[in-house]
Image (tube, rainbow, N blue to C red; front, top):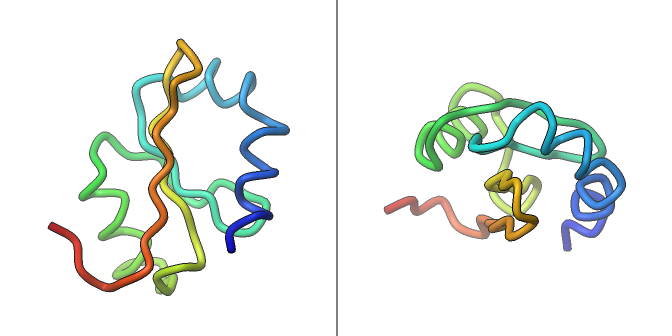
Length: 79
């Protein structure tokens, strides 16, 4: 699940680091759907504004060190 999104991220990670370090990005399919400051903003935008369903997108924390945190949401619950 989300192999396509992970592959997109891996293929573009240097470009993404150059543009979005310190931000949270939403990847769905093989494109960036949004860039946000917090996980909550990104998740709400993905589900409420873009109408994406849980399990169809990933949110990653773009970090200059390469220690990105990838979050995959499988439920509608965000805490």
